[in-house]
Structures are given as C-alpha cells and as structure tokens.
Image (cartoon, rainbow, N blue to C red; front, side, top):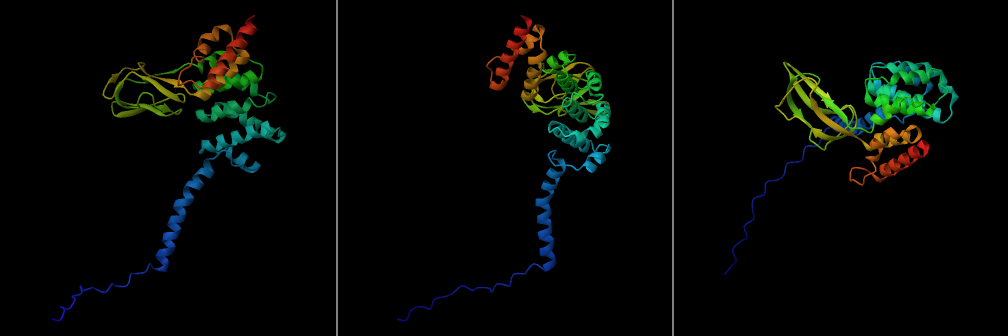
Length: 287
C-alpha cells in the first residue's frame, strides 16, 4: 500500500519589508540625539560649577530675567575669593547691590559670598541690614557670615535656625490640598494650597526640612494667621547654626542646642557631636 502523500501547509510568500527612507532615518537619528542631548544641556546651563569668563560674569550680574544666572555668578565669585583671586574685587559693588535683590535664593547666596572676604568694602554694613530680611534663611546666612567679621549681632538669627519654622495661613480660605506629614520639603516647596474666593494661593515652606506637623486637611476652612504647619530644619542648616554658636553662643542658647544632643533617628551623629562641642565651648566661655 502506498503511503498517503504528506500535505504541506499553504505558505504565503512574505512581502519584502519596507525600508525606512534615508530622510526618515536622518530624522529618527536627530530626534534620538536631541533626546539624549537636552538633559545634558539643561544640566550644563544650571550647574553652578561651570566656569564663567570675566565677560560672562559681568553680563550675568545684570541678567535680571534669569536669577539663576546671578546666583551662578555669585557662587563663582565666592569660590574665587576662597582661592585668593584679587581680581574679583571689581564686582564687589554688585555683590553689595544684590543684598536687596527681590529673589530669596540670590540674597541667600549673596550673604554667603560676603562672608568669604571680611575686607570687602560695604560687606559688613550690608550683612547687618540683611539681619532684617523677610527670609529666615537669608537672615541666618547673614548672621553666620557676620561671625567671620567677629560680629555676633546676628546671634538670635542663628539660634532661630535651630527652631522649627512655623507656617501660618496668609489669608482666610479653604484648604484644597496638602503635603503629607513627614515629607521632606525643599525651601519654597508647596505645603498646601488655599482657595480664597476665585484665587488659589500656594503656601510654601520658608526652609528646607521635614514637615513635622500639619494642622489642616483638605476641605478644612482656615482663618488668616491660623497655624497651618511646622517644618523641622534640615541637617545642613542645623549643623551650620551649631558651628556658628560654637563661636558666639551664650548660655541662654543652650536649650535650643541640647535638643540636638539626643540619640534620635532624625539626628545624625555629626550633628550630635557638633551640639556637644558647642555646648562645651559655651560653658567654657561662661566660666
């Protein structure tokens, strides 16, 4: 008996795959290249470590449309002061002028820069005026810089850096949304949104730190001036304040300092050690 013939499946011949045109390949490669390039360009333009020429420094100091350019320049000037570059003195009048600049971050950096050269003309007086700045961190940085001048006028502002920041409702309204308790918030980060009539107000943190308490929830009504939240200062702020008080602190400041000597998970060992050293230095001066 002859074997049945084997039936083969019908196979439809494959159509040749359409090839990407040269124009489309070029567009694809350019798009991919831009996707990879853009984050690098953004980083390059916002990185304060990028060296600026003297001409760029002069131009950036006048660029009021881009405060980060001004902040970039101030960082560069501060670093050049620390390298004992006498040529930066040509921009000292601009450094003094920026002590009243409307952007907090610029004033904050400016206060740090003036603390790098205690011989800078006008620096000491400008820092004294900055002790009344509306920003807590600017006042604190100005006070820390004054310590380099041998001036303890800003001691209360330094002690304030160790305290949680109290945030209140700027106007009466209804809370729309809030951050979660325990969340780390950068300076200027949104703590809550408040609906006042047709306007929505963003309530921002005056310091960088952890949101310790929140006295309102979404949908809750608030009156102007009511306590809304407290923010614990971050480690860097506390450490710098303790270092400043090591030099100018007084016995009255000890309660704020001793609080950071406790062995708690949110207090790094570096901060505890500095708090102990600061307390010791203050007690020795008092004797």
